[in-house]
Image (cartoon, rainbow, N blue to C red; front, side, top):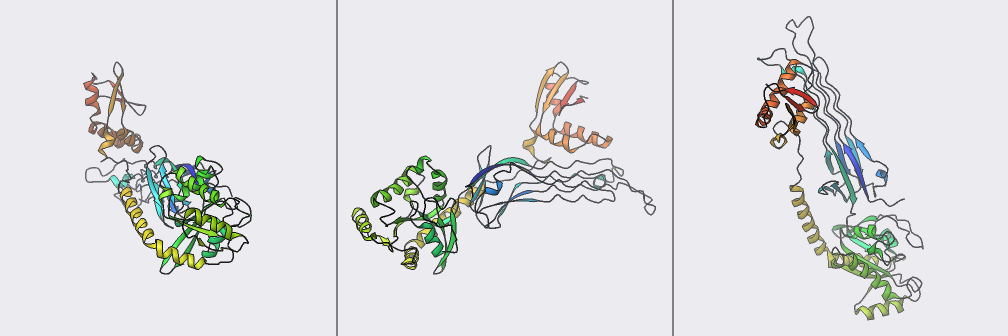
Length: 432
């Protein structure tokens, strides 16, 4: 499978359905009156965490995600059906960015976690909605709001309590298959693992997630091979196990094998070298491992914990040691991360265009030529779409929006006179 851990999508929620103008003509209702229903809401675009996904591979060729529009309103005051929501499934650990501002919109951290990245437009009201004691036969109606639209970037940062790092053939895939329910592909050649593999293990009263990070090579921090893609998955591991093969067949120079990985962590930076790192020697089932073990312990002046992942020698003891030495650290790091994410999410607000949105009332009026003035306004642009200029009542209502925005006053400050022209959304209006 191709390694895909980031992609860009243009997402657009569904538009709201239009409200309609309709009249009651039933015999048993002699008063009749407005009978037009409201349009249905447009469908949302929702990002959802899915533990069954491990990459963004399925989205690699999808450039756009377009939501379903709401249905138009109907007679007999019947509302249109809402548009169906579209769910975009992503792996856990996916961060959603706004492609333009680069701001983090949401971190998908749990299976089933949902984030409405684009909200569907509200349905427009039909003329039955506008009936009042002042206007018993309204011809007012509205188009549905446009669905929100944006370009987003999805980037995976696989989450794990403990990441397994090391050179290819260190035995990481074998180890994670022994301690968890993960079933990675295992073979005796480099780069068997091309995507990170997650596995869960219960140790005493805790469930820990281990991650088999694909083997690093010299130059990974500078982008050699798939180095950058592999290294950035380590960023979200709370602690690391540096697994090193003690087999003479895998490493002629055991010190160089150790230093290569440590140097790549330092060169990449971003605090990787400061994470808790537990050095573990593997493949003690192979003849000649003792010589490499002695060389490594003499050089580092520490006692190396040794295992055979293949034969599961000392593997249970390794898990117990990780629990005893690192569980307090892991819990504290998790708590700090959760608190920092909560602070980040406080600033995330979803704005909707609305007639009460004062920011949208910013008006720019420019004199194009004598007697003609160009108007730029998100507020009026919204209402120009919202109010079809196809009935007398709707024309009156839109003119009220123009007046409430004090557009004519701004134009008169530039020398406009009654009878001059205002151009709003490429449509001409006459100044009173």
